[in-house]
Length: 339
Image (cartoon, rainbow, N blue to C red; front, side, top):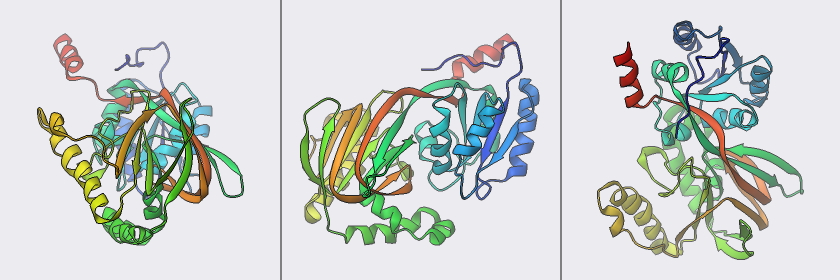
């Protein structure tokens, strides 16, 4: 669904760029934005840098306090998550200028990657699309409670341990290939998650699992579909529970994710050939999930480690973000014919 753009208001709009100075070419961004804002009749765009101490929340609050109507995020998923954590409580629109190794949120919204001109064009001429955002409360092993947001997924188990085991210097040099050795280290860890959980207002369950993913989006890099029924605007989480037992269990997971999700679901009539859930991999939808773990476990949000959690409560906020996306081709055609 899309809503009308807001350029034709009585007073000029103001954009702000929140950028990660390590990942972007600021001069190129300034040049592209200056040209687009002039054509659109917007006020001069403001710029706010993230820092090691502020991944984006503080800069976003500063931008909103300065009157920004649209926040453009120039950075990776971590910067997007930090900015969205603040923007969802405002009336501002969020636009993406993806830069980094993952860009999972941009991929799931089918936005251009590493294309400044296209991203700027979408920001100033696109339409608003309401999408969901995940809100999560994490209680650590010391019972300290922190509150966060995520736009792609939260993960416990292998998913989070992989991030902890990743060499950041290697990641900067070779990108996602750096995760290969991290995955190998994580797979060698035979420990299980032992949890008690509740979905929505249902009864409590006890379970053992290798990995638990709470997802707002389903696509990963390399066109891998981890959560085949996930959509960023359906008002639900998609939860994946992995509990492989030996090589056969991992083969079942690989078959579901890479063959069924990655191949069969992409061809006409292929979905009818997919199988039911297997013990090694189960899917379920919910609007809220509460969980208590027997021991504190690593947790990640949108690809960043958030330490260890002993308990959590995650809920979906439907249409919690207004994302800037390209105009539908039909609208572009109408404007072209009118001009």
